[in-house]
Length: 595
Ligand code: GDP
Ligand code: MG
Image (tube, rainbow, N blue to C red):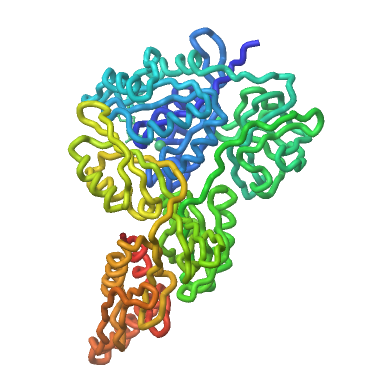
């Protein structure tokens, strides 16, 4: 029997039009009415809309009656485009049989296009090239087709030309999806195998597990088990996303939808696991995929110690929907009680910190981001550390993580990019020409230097034209030291950092210079120092203040004085006292932003 389902993802470089095309597909299939059609419906989180990126993958089922008269069920699984979220891309691809490769007709292939294609190929997906933005005067679809053939090696005879903006070509795209995306292969009467590709926590209904059924049928009342843990559950509801959750009697081979089991923690339904029936179980689970790995670590502290419990609860809630966020309690002499958190990358970290502020209304300080180091101590002990505070005094060797970075850039900026990669301790690998104007460079780079501000610098030094993508390649030995920052002779552990020996002096100096600007003058002199062990490598002094705030308003204007005092109190709330010095929140932030 013919299977009328088609499961696919859209992969693209950021801004090439993935979300816009998804919106048009939803609209043209009548999945949402015009009234419901908000632009970029699939990007539901506020923050996603603001930052213009898709963070969590989402699934939606479209009903489409094709030219052959058949009613098809098209399951579109949206994926994020940013490098930080490559793990989420990987897991949504695992639920698909094919992928639409969207390339901007005016821009051509970019670094993320390549990275996403390689991921899709790893998952054995059929790739259908879609050339978008053909309405633009600068569009050159023929050139982009050649690029796809030359650089990726993908034939483009079946490429579809569209404009997500005007809707041109979207009907042909729907026909092409039916024709070129392979139908699901599983057996209806085989033992159940369903892949968990995502999950989210709902306050009322508990964990909603997103599944793709590979073999068999699953319905309400079924007794199921998770194959890796053998934990058993009863299915309370099955359904699809259209795009709202809509109950359905059953999900069968090729279905993409959700199941509710009353599970209270997403830890019980790990993404990548296989679900099967308790009776007549499948023999072997589906192949899992690359698990998410924290790459960037930072301490997160509430400004007010009263918020500690709230912060813990907020992190717990965020983790329910974002298994890639990790946290453990930690204490800092400077900042008190907080949490050491692990993130996929710097953008991920920014998003989490912003969500804690906005959705949970907690004022926070985060320490400078760090990576995970492998240390061998003098006694031969092996340590893994992600926090400068744990840096051992005596060590034999230390290794740091390296990535292989691919950068695609117009030829004019090659010099700037090489310079930046050198500053970031990169090792040149090779360079190739994509066409007359664009060059692809490859460098091995230490992750620690990439996470701080590599991407921002790359963008500014290439006027936004460069695209960048990276993959982990492993650990390499490096000459690394720990630098401490002292305020009035006290080490502020939150400012400590690990750096390459050659960078320690410059970074230490710029931190004390910056602190001098942002720490307000106080009644006494404040020395600021950067120290490498017991050696002071940089020093600045904040001179003592003479006048106090009230000195300015002579006369008896009581209410004005009150206001000033109130204001001062407000300001204090955002300060952390280190010894007898009050350090404003900005100081922590500016050190964090420093390169
Ligand atoms: P995504 O990052 O891949 O999801 O890209 P978006 O769908 O958010 O699109 C990025 C930008 O390109 C938005 O400003 C869109 O309005 C614009 N855009 C998308 N498709 C088209 C198109 O076909 N033509 C034109 N001119 N602009 C488009
Ligand atoms: Mg998008």
